[in-house]
Length: 245
Image (cartoon, rainbow, N blue to C red; front, side):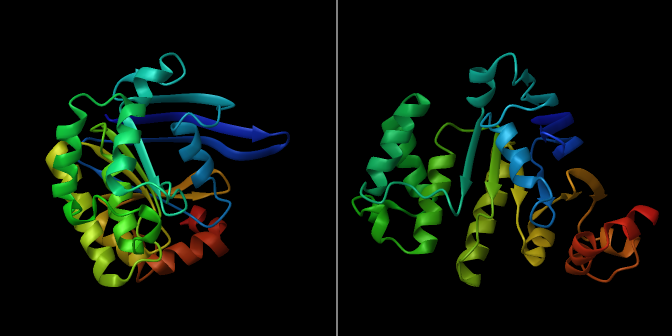
């Protein structure tokens, strides 16, 4: 397993933001972490990234216990989100170099050139990130996220605000990365069409717990619903009804 989460919890006083969550992400698999706002998605991701300390439970990344060997575990991880933009006053190439140095990437020049080619950024290398389009910035962010050849990639709303054609191109790139590099990907999104197209498996969180898990193409019908969007809305509005099914 690339990622194993066991009985993960995070409490703030009497509030359980995450309450006994357990799941795995396998190599070459894209898992959707879904749920309404406040369900515990971002808190879970922040604990996996080592930003928040869990109140209980265990996180293992590529076989390494995050609590015991934080640096070794996080060396195998990377992250990108639409709200985590790269410094706009640096060029594409400068951003990749700075983050490559932070990650301690070996043969950094060669790695940057390979990623510029992979994400069709060669013509933008000297352009400051702050003047790029949303789609171009997303491609740069993904290149940054793959600098250290992560075994686990966490993507929080990676295609939000992109036009449909650009979002489709980004989805193709991400699926190719998962397949070619045998990495595991944990993906959050509110776009259920995208989730159904990209994800191999989905987890629905509700009030800090895993409510449902399964194949996004068949899970709605298992609960008497037509679409994944219908299922998402039901999770948001009537989670107790799903617990009884």
